[in-house]
Length: 361
Image 1: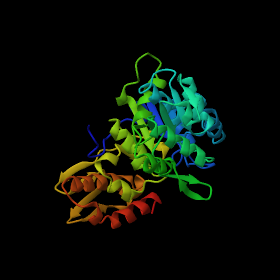
Image 2 (image 1 turned 30 degrees about the vertical axis):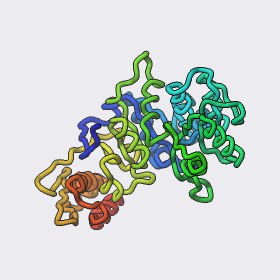
Image 3 (image 1 turned 120 degrees about the vertical axis):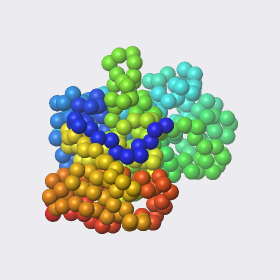
């Protein structure tokens, strides 16, 4: 598998280079009930260039039409057929493992149950029905009895699958246990780990999207699909696992430091401030010599474990500080690939310069 060692360049806007955008939602398009800055504008411009937007979420509890309604309320032109949830992918995943008509014990909300039924399986709630598989997902009303029935079924020989492995989930009052955390009681009780997972960071969601959004009987080629996300450990890792190019945006979880010190499995192909990055060309980062990289007017040099930026105020302000981040990312990734410990890397001065550049200072 070819993981991104350095960023790629694109002389044309990404919306012309890639046919299908696989957009994460929270942190990319919205934050809770609030729109992310420039999200609707960037998506509309990308559509005008011929790119089809689709939306991917690890949340298995909401029906696609509900998600689409929220997007429309934020000014994004979307309907339910544009949304892929981990429930949809999980139901399709089961078709690769189980015979049609098999009984599946569901730990999850009605959206997941509906998708599993539509895929030709019988949904059950009790281990005494002798299901052939258990499919576990997060939902806010998860009960002890659901977890107990899942454990009983697995102990009796049912195969164990999950919609996703997210350890946490953002809620109104803060960060709550996610589906991954809720799997721990099952794993500890039965000694069995899930055989497969539908959600990111596995690439199944992107793989299934290529079939779901294809207008022919062949999947859309992977090299014209672009996953877009704000999390390196889910969105971008899933892209790398599936050998897709990817775009990370700085409107959610990922910070410049996280990008600069990312492991090979979590390195993006392109970096943008927000979804307007779909409608822009992306400059090359060029290696000048050992520990020295340039992106347009920004040069980053390494001295030991310290990385310093050489750039004029004009160079930093003209491109939102991103050229410094591009050059620094390639310089740090090269050092890490050469054996440098990420915990020892000092990029503090570059972080400050990128932050100032983003404010136009």
